[in-house]
Length: 317
Image (cartoon, rainbow, N blue to C red; front, side, top):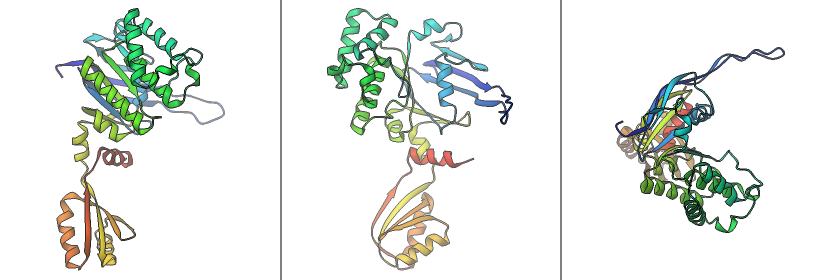
């Protein structure tokens, strides 16, 4: 990638075996296994995977919190291990699961953070005011951060991450505790920061609609290895099964029997027959229903989504 500002090559993290006296020993464990990827300028890159896939370990290494067993990381073309302090002046992070000091007010927390990143006083005042007002948090600026709700705290964390206009932001589940309307607000804010400031973003989320809407590209991690690297649309298109719903008004039992004969996953909800079927078989299946005199008044066909892809890889061995 010619416009890469983060490059990860052959990254591996192994945890040594542990021996215990009164319980079973733990063998050596490979959390991430020889992964390589790049993050481009102004790109929003989704980072997906089932629990235990290695996402948190990877982010910890990218932040310098944890050292890799092997592999290379370069930010802006510079080796991370040799230029960490300089690099981290342009990298920020936010997570639903990390708390700010609870006894400091919202404003004090953000002001301290902005000072660490060397922001001028006028810029601090401007950005804190602008961002808190965007998220309807301005009236809470003098409240202790520890008194905020989970959703309010998450919004403050997002503000913190973008406050100093970093070049790269790592976001871990940024909308996990938010109501749908606030989640939408956060997504719009993230996309605005990308378009206005050229910010590059690495985003982990379990909200597949969020990833589909926000991300240019998605990395899929499973058991420590990258198993896919593509757009959300292409990953969804790789799922062959579509979901069909028929409102059957005549011979519902015959339609159910046909599904059973073809080993199709299906269920009946009142007069609705819900079926999972390979997209290429849909036309032939409907023709067979007609030959059985199955009559239906409504039909809807739902194309596979990124969530369908995620469920598919989560179930596979």
